[in-house]
Length: 283
Image (cartoon, rainbow, N blue to C red; front, side, top):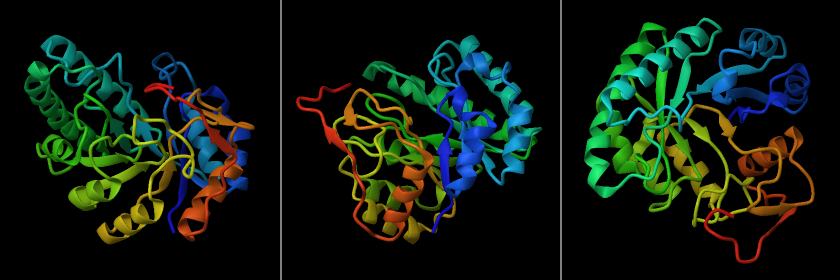
């Protein structure tokens, strides 16, 4: 139904030919590059993108750095420096054939008193990034975020992307803490350009494999079909077991292919993990 995709999630082991071969063997058709800041201009991504093409894997998107780089920074000089840095990344990777860039509108915590100012700064930045991306035949997708971050619900996402019609949305399904996935999809509609697929317990983001949490996956599928979503089914979770759940083993590409096909076909999801008792907010 959709092409299956994976985030590289910053791991060097996911940036080589062995990983690309595993993707090819398990019908993983596309990847999103996500890497630590110190790897962006030191790792040979040009070769990785060429290798991916040789293996029949599309480099679908690049996740712009966050935490250290905040487009909602109230310090104007720092905000401008982030935009300049992001332009360097977009210029570089567009030459490698990557033309879709995922951005966080903020990091946190954000005090209520600062929220309006940070929304204004983020919107200014997104307008600039949309213009920059267009210069390189690329697009910016704004990701919904949890807790006190900007873009924590559909209404805030719509406000953020209202500054330029070229902006789209990366829907992270495990970031919603105040509305359902179906409600978000209905409000955002065709502006959803790409996905970050993972599951959670509705308490906090968890980045679990679908079936390990509480998301109604058939409701998600129905919503995406209704709004005409055409992007990939792109998973964003680590292969290694996070501290918030117990698995018998690490994940592999075969697990993602099976999980996606079970969702696409409306079958019961294979689960080989168990919940932790008394799981805290962060695990």
